[in-house]
Image (cartoon, rainbow, N blue to C red; front, side):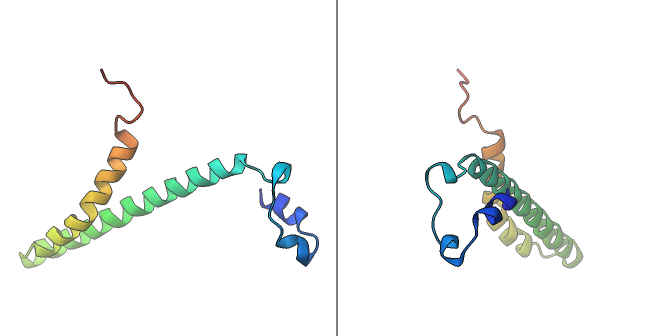
Length: 95
């Protein structure tokens, strides 16, 4: 993928010209978007889980679970959006 871009760049002027028509590889865009979505979903899930684990451990140690409530108020909707996106019924005929 990157080798093709480097082969196209020959002069400094050519580097700033946009690729149009047959020069623009539209098929690579979908793969990049899918990898980006996958990466972002893993980062959101891991950071939410880590924050919940840390705040839960702190709550158990101190007996004060306000921090866990705050973290869940932020992480809960993000986790819900991920679950809805990957396991929701969008595009499926349930009836």
